[in-house]
Image (cartoon, rainbow, N blue to C red; front, side, top):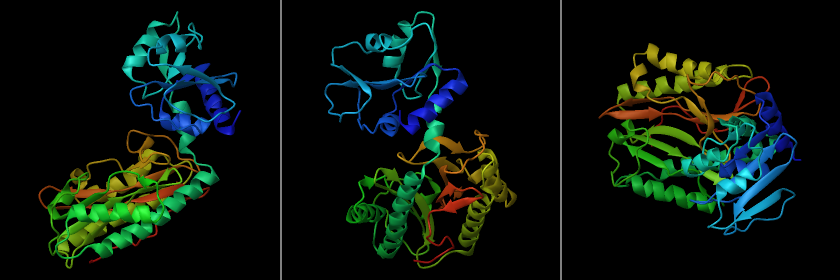
Length: 355
């Protein structure tokens, strides 16, 4: 049994779970090394407290051999019957947060006194703590992201559109050997930056515009994510002051990160600083999200999570202020929690800059 499965089983035992059905393709890959995008078809990994595991996969997909028992299904086979034959129907079955209702409900109907409980946190919190190999992959993806964001800033010139910058970014990631983007690049000029998730369009850069670049690549299977906000040729003093405020919030939050500090308290450190300046209502999202094989993994740096952080956890720190109809500023780094603080894996200067 591999170490990752051992850790998951340890968490299952802490929860009193004897069996767990994992359907998140990212978690299946994390635990088995088998990568399948099942689309509308079923993919599942049953993990038992004994250490045994069974992979259920459609015959459509080609997977490499492992020491994990594999059950193959065709398109006309019953998923619920296959699962029911592999579990103890009288015991609780932990299920994944991503298990679609079209599979979940028929599986529930096959139980004989047992019940379904949400159990994916047994895998999620194991994934949240990166081993040294994973941390190095996160650093490498972020190293490329540092290079590309500087190149993108240099690429911005009179007459360029948001879409042209986004397309340029994608090409640079390919040049550096990335598998692709970890999410569609966010490139926002001027008023568009007041929308945190604005998608790049034909908007042309204008003198005095703020420029938000929120970008990330995937390298060796792991994601990067970083945001910087610049100003084109000149900056209004009020805009520059907001930039300083957001940068300070980012730095303050990163300074409190260390093992044992709760995720909600990291969020509060940034949020309270922005609120004290009178802009609390304009910081409209969580401070951060966990990241690794996927750009958004389970776990938020927000008031909703009071979980203490552990060495090896990797998440974003991205405060922002968004003034509707005017502009927005966001500054984002990725951090890896260390034994006595955190490592900021992005090294691009965060101060206000003209481009």
